[in-house]
Image (cartoon, rainbow, N blue to C red; front, side):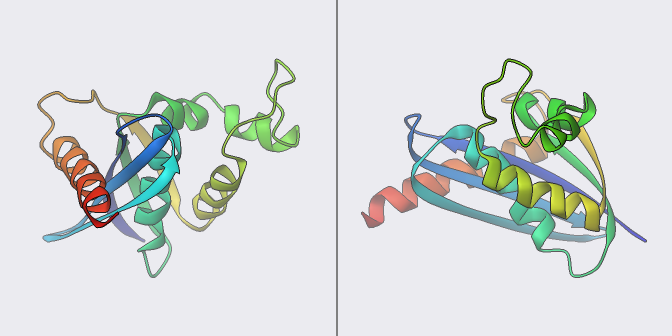
Amino acid sequence: MKKVILYTDGACSVNPGVGGWGAVLMFKDFKKQISGAENETTNNRMELTAVIEGLSCLKEPCEVEVYSDSAYIVNAFTNGWIYSWEKSGFIKSDNKPVLNVDLWQQLIKLTKTHKVNFNKVKGHADNEYNNLCDKLATDAVKNFKAEL
């Protein structure tokens, strides 16, 4: 199984508002950068979209190390919340609905195709690829706004 590294980040100028996402995929010496933007979205939706879009680029099942500064995403998997949410019909322990169910369901499906390990990185620090993903996401927001 191929081993891929995926860095991701999401950004929102106003929450909710115009948001962007960025991702960098790495396999051996190959690097691919992707990004996009949406109107009327949230930072968490963009964080999720970055991971989904990155994993969706893979043409075959892979072993993927995902690096994200989003505790929202990383903790959902490393703490097992996602599995509890799935079992409960996406109702949290406080009986409130889980937000962004559509994206969580897409991500769960992708994690069943690929062997995915989630890693938390510190945002806006000295991590080259996290900073690159942040730039991809914020540039996508700027470009989207320029086209409005």
